[in-house]
Amino acid sequence: MEWRKMVPSITPWKLPLPSTTKIPSDRQTAWCSLSSQVRFPATFQTLESWGRENVYLLFPADLYQITMAYAYWKAGKKDSFAVFDLFFRKNPFDGEYTIFAGLEEVLRYIYCFQFSEDDMGYIRSIMPAGTEEEFFQYLADMTTRDISVYAVPEGSIVFPREPLIRVEGPLPVAQMLETTLLTLVNFPSLVATNAARIRHAAGPSKELFEFGLRRAQGPDGGLSASKYVYIGGFDGTSNTLAGKLFGIPVRGTHAHSFVAAFTDLTSLKNKMMKHRKTGVEVDFVALSQKYRAEMAPLFQVIDNEIDGSGANNGELAAFTQYAMAFPNGFLALVDTFDTLR
Image 1: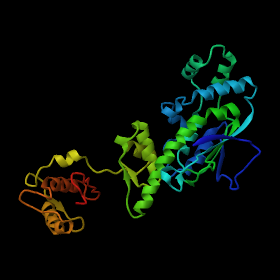
Image 2: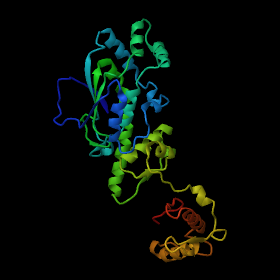
Image 3: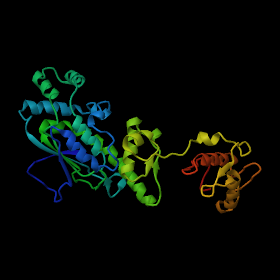
Image 4: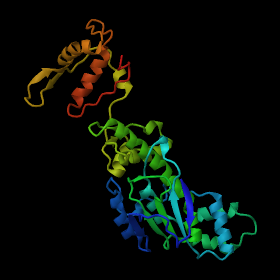
């Protein structure tokens, strides 16, 4: 995705951006009106509760945003009005569409934007000697109160070279937002698009859950991915933090270690379970063995009750015990043999 400066008087697109919001000095009202765009419920009562502990609020910018701001300031263009459009050139995965995501984080960032004293100390250390002192004060006082944001609603289907977000306001301030807005939209849109493609392939009747936290690019990457696959069409996540923060349904199976903890059926202490409708206790393990024997020929699996060859009795023991623990929400992890064999 790219950040393109537009001449304010030119509007080359026939369709207007469907959602517009100006962020005033009292920006909490603007935030509340925008939170309804996202699929999940807004969790945080105020943006202050999000805090600067989030990595994208900790001054993520490229050096040239700082140096350009100085050049703008030196040239007397700090109050010049500018318009920037965020767009992309090519759909991911050689596909025909993209799902736009990341808007909530963009708005949070713009709302909270301000250089801290620590930020200013670092900026002083990287700027060339001879940088005028007044410029550093200008940066320290920089806010986004004069910035207006126009955006496509989060979760929309979008296409290359159309504006997803438009930022209007003072040239140095709008320019300062470039890198962060790009990174806050690129990854979420990639994840949401991938999820939408999987949803399309699976069809509407299948439930999809993402279990990608352990393979994600760090904790924040995992949290972001959980959120944006939900926007892309998944039904839930295994990530409990995403469930807590964003209200996404949480689902899970069990680890392979759970399966490995059971070796055979004879050592099981609990085999009885009440029928959900009648309340009559049945030997659930024996019932599972009966159904396995009936289904084995269909799947061309050897059902050897003596030593468990072919159909593993340890796995069956693990699955029955997990099903008995969660009779109304059983979801098994089958990863120990070729399920298509």
